Length: 71
Image 1 (cartoon, rainbow, N blue to C red):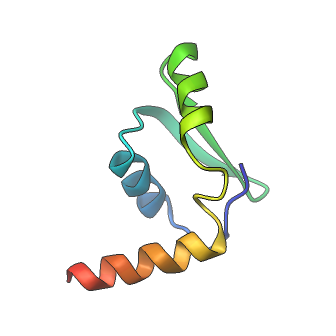
Image 2: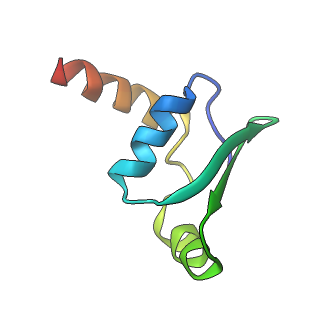
């Protein structure tokens, strides 16, 4: 899935945890986010459940506003 370049690894992992995604590994390759899930059943659920635009520019700014709100 596409990812906005300003997301950091820690913010990506925080978002995944908030969505109860139990990943094995996370990496960014050529502006695409690659998330390794523990098994293929979970991978299918994850692909259906998580919105494609979760890591786009709008979500980046939204999550930044929310994190500033909590401090």
